[in-house]
Length: 512
Ligand code: NAP
Image (cartoon, rainbow, N blue to C red):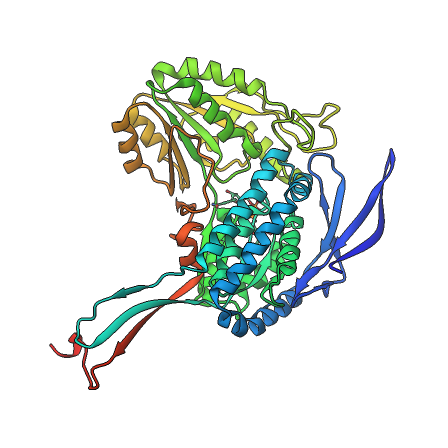
């Protein structure tokens, strides 16, 4: 039994609303309590209700998880990649069968509206199926030797035990982006989910277990970043770190990994621009900006937080955009008709409201929203109205820093090159979008964009699992997740030379 059903009941003014489950850590194929003997609460950000309790993990728990992953590694690396892939495929079929239930749970723990939660689960399904296909590829290279009677190729090996740390905004998709390629490549895993959304990862572990994943191959320890996360970063038994989260924490993870010469993959913050040129289809650009800015309440690394509009269409675009933004209905994402959910937690809400105040102080014009919602439907949750600033200039804090909430800035550009320069004027470089009918400008922008992802006539959000995902500048450190580059992250390359000449052939370097 993986879940310990506690006897805690939730009492509210209106009575008992349900039994609360206490989830355990998953180590060496068993569901176990933390050595701390303590748990932490997971709350619904839309209603303030307690959803479940999770283990407050310790460094000791992580050490046990690493030991288990280390023990499981030799047999798992020997398992044919196609068999490893079969487990991924079986898991994807279970995910498909349980998609609705998992999506509902995700809306409860994360707040994103149900249709978006379904998309999050679907991305996990897609990634598991895509990576299951990789079980029959995992390509290396063959090439000619510089010598006679000698064969050359490269093959892929797993890295070993990999440590994974993830954020709360895609509770299942981001873990799946990491877990699926790592497993098909033959690695074993120690995983720490975000403390705001551990439930989806527990469900993923439960499903992989059901699909036949051998014990110890995936280990999940819940608990705080400062304890569980730190031990994963520092533990000498871990050979690779895969981190998605803020640039601030990512920097710490990078430094910690460097100290033990780990490879480290970082996927971090964004400050993504959507450019709207004067020849653009304005209605389409408005739709794109609306989805890009307010999807997942703006809590996406790819969120459109800057809309850079060429002067001749600025007024018209702004009017249309504000009209559409007024139509957003904020509330509990499980309810019909709701188009935007809450902010993940109180701390994040305070941070966003702080940015709104800074925007006003620095001279930006608040065109819409900008406040916490506290009506009947909102008073128990963390809700901020969709917020639009106008007259934003590139030196302002709200134009530079990642807000990670339903706040977007409209900025005026004199012409195409001015728009490109404004778009590139930040320390981040994840996703870029341009709306135009001019193919020359679209291609020029593609060339000049300082970003890892680029869209023409589509919003800054909407990744596909078979294409590389990642960013430049403060967003990443050179790697890419997903697609075939996801395989690169989780494998070591070995160059192999077979000499069938029967004699000692010295390489050219030793013959000159
Ligand atoms: P975060 O605060 O950086 O946390 C990310 C993860 O790191 C969490 O699991 C957290 O644990 C853990 N952590 C915190 N301190 C740590 C430490 N000292 N050592 C090791 N681990 C530690 O980020 P977040 O607020 O969850 O997520 C939002 C950020 O993620 C945004 O900046 C967003 O842009 C970024 N993001 C990037 C991508 C991308 O692909 N580029 C995708 C999604 C999100 P706790 O939860 O226990 O604090």
